[in-house]
Length: 305
Image (cartoon, rainbow, N blue to C red; front, side, top):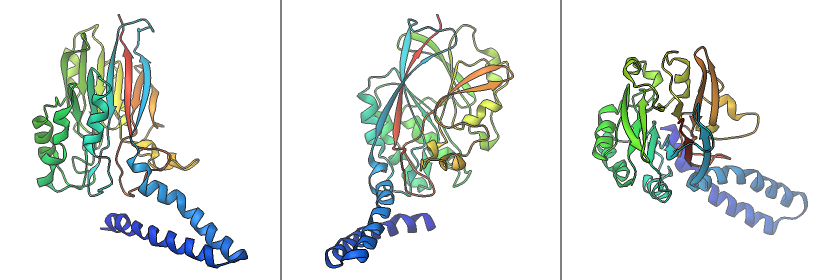
């Protein structure tokens, strides 16, 4: 597989760098400068392959849900997505993610899909077992790579792994629950590309209770019925471009609307919709991250009174 060839072939950078350093010691003048230039040009790729994918950062943001103020009651949640555990051994380990989230003492954890990237079916249960160590309740949905768009359809294996870890799975349904002592509706939608989203459950939701809508693809905002008045959509999918090269990264973000990362306002016919997009912790296609390290978002959400 080409992806694995690139992954393992990238280790050739280390002998390349040693050869360049040796030549720089032996050569003089323009030849030395040329070799030094080759080495310098290769450094960003080496960083993107061997360093940045292992840097787990936490981004914090405060969001006022519609009708809330800065003095309104609040909850703290962790949002992450796109772990893409599978063929790339350099993907961020789930154990690190769980430890980092537990250190934040949040009220709830939200996993916005694309858990996998071509893993063996028999490895799925073990890969995602660390989710069971989360201290806060976990809500999770699947993404396009989990359900076969593209890749193998791992729906059954992943659902079993999530349930074994104690996760609640609000796909095309909602949970009326409490987070941080406050009543909240946690709703969810299955992956957009799978074309099985069903928002019929929204008709029976109680009024006056904040609704968090968890999904994978933020383009779901384009298809939510106007009469489904959720307060905040939580999504992933974009990777923030993964290789965030200026003037280029937006060309590779796989969304219809101009979604990118963090808080976005989508102007639907039913009014402005708040959509928050996390940039993921894993990688697809190329085993690289540049200017967009693996990230967990810690969100303080002020609730309407």
